[in-house]
Each structure stands twice: as structure tokens, then as C-alpha cells.
Length: 158
Image (cartoon, rainbow, N blue to C red; front, side):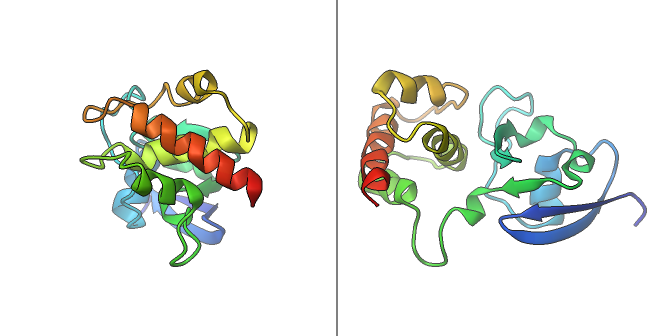
């Protein structure tokens, strides 16, 4: 296959792939690299289901070209757990039943991780603002907010 050669780091591992100029990072992650955690909800950056962290910045993978990943460090939901040990956010999402169909959950988890990295002790308002780029059609958001609050407490104590 001809295409653009890209070298990047994904979840701490060096990765090389070929992609077409018009291919999004979301398509590369899902279709070329088998990292299917990020979901395409809208394809326009409005829902957050495809949220990943690129060079320490939360982005919608549907709005980034795969070729733009050259030299970047990317974190996806697949890298959140440490082997079989879930990240505190993942544990609290389960404990608080902060998910239903699960399509939006990886994006919410990545957005929450980004938020807690920048602000380890957010208020409820800051959590709601920090997650505002992620949409869920199944929940009322309260369980998600409570899970993030609880995870923040656990992470501060760790």
C-alpha cells in the first residue's frame, strides 16, 4: 500500500503506520491499528465519542488527520488501564453505573482523565464544564459527574 508513513507513540509504544492523506486519526486507530475504543459518533467533533489525548491535549480523533500524528504521543482508552488493573476512573464509572450503552464511555473517560490531570480537585461545575464536549444519549450525566468526583478523591489519596 502506498501512503504517508507515520511514526508515533501510542499508549507508550512506538508505532509506525501508512495512511492516506485524507484519513482521520480515528480511522487509523480503528481500522489500521485495531484500537477500537474510540468511537465515531458524529464525525464532526461535536460528541466527543472519539476523544483521545495527543501530546497532552484532549482532541476529537475524527478532526485530526492520521498524518498529523507524526512524532506525537497519543493516549487512547486502551492504554488507560495498567494491565488487568483498572484506572480509578474506570473503577468509579463501573461502581457508579456511569454508563449504559457504552458508546460515549471511552470519550468521557479520556476527557475526565485529561481534566483530572490538569485539575486534580475540580468542583462539580468544573467537572461539568470539563466534560461538556462529550455527549451521552443514555444517562442524565449525574452518575458520570459523581464517578469523576469519586475518582478525583481516590486519585488525590493515592
